Image 1 (cartoon, helix red, strand yellow):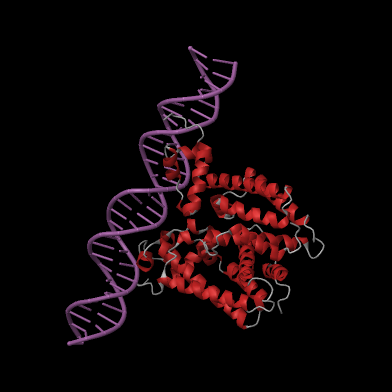
Image 2: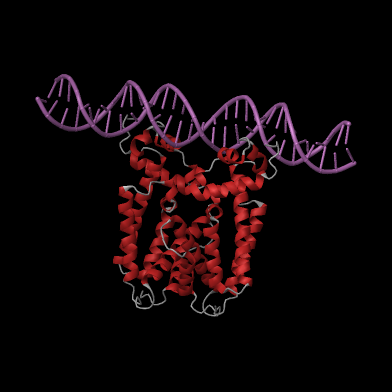
Amino acid sequence: MPYHHGDLRRTLLAAAADAVAESGAAAVSLRELARRAGVSNAAPTHHFGDKAGLLTALAAEGYGLLADTVTRERLSGGGIVGMGVAYVRFALDHPGHFEVMFHPALYRADDEELSAARARAADALAAGVTARPGAGGGDAGTAGVAAWSLVHGYATLVLAGAVRTDDPQAQARAIARLLFPDDAP
Amino acid sequence: MPYHHGDLRRTLLAAAADAVAESGAAAVSLRELARRAGVSNAAPTHHFGDKAGLLTALAAEGYGLLADTVTRERLSGGGIVGMGVAYVRFALDHPGHFEVMFHPALYRADDEELSAARARAADALAAGVTARPGAGGGDAGTAGVAAWSLVHGYATLVLAGAVRTDDPQAQARAIARLLFPDDAP
DNA sequence: GCGCCGGTCTTGTCAGTGACAAGATATGCG
DNA sequence: CGCATATCTTGTCACTGACAAGACCGGCGC
């Protein structure tokens, strides 16, 4: 085992995402993560400062991934329903990130890198709402909040085990179509 | 100060709800709650066994309150939109309970009292969905999941600070009407 | 009135944790 | 080769959750 781990920061983030997904942010211990990575208990401190720093980095990574996922779907013409499904897919694929992202008490919301990533995600989502076909009827802001609430709530309920289904993406598509029946694809 | 507190269980639950709402479940410490209540650090153990026991009781109380809130709205003829608004109002009035309820990793999901309260809440919500006027069009299950997702997601986003508004209940009503335009009131 | 029994709370203890200080080691650059 | 810096370790402290053992209190039967 070399003295320098080589890629400790990335390793710790990945382990943290797994641990949060599995047992919740409260149950994650820096020492446990350090043990899994094969380093001493104080090594994570160097990279993240403290626990909030690690979760801040995790949230920032999550917002970046979300922005990528949603943007890719928008560019491939999935429509607002497709973007909603992509949002749900992101949450289910990255439950650890998702969990932390929407609990600001866990991290430093004023972090620069995090704010940038969050803004990028917000732009990606907003682009999908304003560009939808039937955008004439009703307030775009209200429709956007409704769309976000719908997919966010669905993802949260599935992750919490409150809603059970074999095919979450299909069900996500079905409920999104209830809200946006006019969406093209 | 009498040796017996008199109402320690209730006092601890209330303090826990406040503390969770303020700083998240992770930041709540049994010792801090005990200090606030003016008892020793091991007193809570007697009533709840451990931290998971306390959060289990808090979640059960929350499901009971939710069932009461939603049922009252249904009986007063608020329709499915009114029930959705009541759901949001419950979440914003009891953020500590709401936070814990949908993080099963924090408590013992197989607890008897909790299961009963959760079933009561589920029945109250289901009664509203199946009784709505335009129940003919589409799958009732899908519509129910959509309704639940919408209001749950909206409440979660407002609590997380991701959506900001002066009048959450009015906005909740607006987005619920997008999903259920035919709802009577 | 009295004893005692169960429920309530306290004190004391242990391992695990987050945070930090001080120092050791490796890496890259001149 | 020599050194500055990034990276990691060891050691320490206060705090927490969990538990064991015992003290205290209220109400019950007698």
